[in-house]
Length: 528
Image 1 (tube, one colour):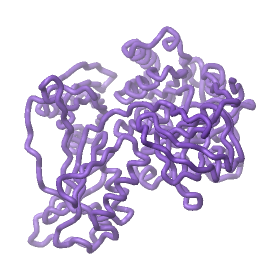
Image 2: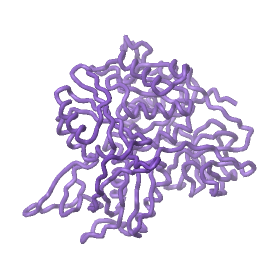
Image 3: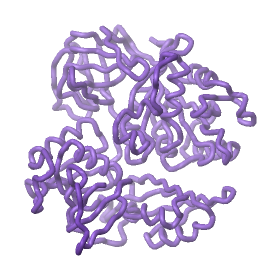
Image 4: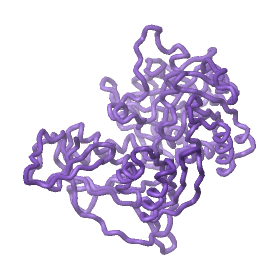
């Protein structure tokens, strides 16, 4: 059965290409908000850290209606470190809306998310965004998109994917890139989604099957699972059985106590949902991402996507400094371990392992930012801990030690390209491509992931703050040619900023750590 009055779409793009801003305009123009309602910018970025840093960390669901058709929208992160969020939500949708900046063009994360969408054989709609930028180069970006599709082995049907030209900030879209001003609203975008994105299919008469692609928490109903109903009908009070494609030992039984449908950027309680609907449910406190909810009469798990392996590792341990326990609320190894285990339930790209000692844990993620967000979240929650410097994860293939590699794209003014090439060359980067765009240079490198550690501050200095750097990891990796010694020094993560630091007679260093000012004092780290 095909639900013609429903579309499930995920918005994917490189970081800062305008996904969340475009979702704001789609909600407004579809009538999701009252005329006199005060709506904040980037309404989907609800987390404190998301709003402070201006990035999307967690994928979020919302919906709007257009011409009697409900469009379920999944807003995804654009940063490479949170690529696991993109991979898991693609199982919920039937099509993707690929956003590409009209000035920056195709960036590393554009390649990553597009590759994942093509592998799932999802319907593709391409939107060239920010066409109102004065440095927009729409014709060149169109060619870049087509070249990227061919490079990723797209089919003829995928190469013929429709293309619209948008301004997310102004809320306009047009079919004609030569006349961007012809767009007055987002009607062309809505019409393209309805025409080219395939409606969901499912058999409502079959036993219930639903894959859990996301997990949320509510203070009133507790832990909730989010996913798309594949087959059957899910109802409040119905008995269910939980299984898992990758873990046959998972066996749980329970009942659905609450069921929620997504309305605009909120949730609305409902009594039932059928095949194709994206809903949230409560009643199973131990539900996790990748589980399948089934009818007890037919327990059959649904396959879940394989998430790319982590590339960076840090050691989290109990703070054993002289100042231990003075600022944190949760300081024991048991409390830190429980918090890390809870994080695993909603972050499929994270891995946690016990180390050789009882008071430390190996935490592995997709990048420095991925782990720094976790550290900052735990710090704000009152956890006090020590962390080691990050180092890359290696593995052996055919007797050779392999390390993760990065595809690095640098966009800098022509004046500073020499500084960047010299600095990255010293970090074992290999120049792959270079092109000129007016007065700026776009340079593509291949380099070891470890070479990017600590480079952000130097990059900002070398480019006078005018450069743009983006990267994503190759999972396959390349042979490790140079061994680097692991730094054993650990840093104390304060539960709150230091109230005052005496600098008289003390050596204090200040630097930038994951976008925040950090003061090093007696080998302790204080966020400021």
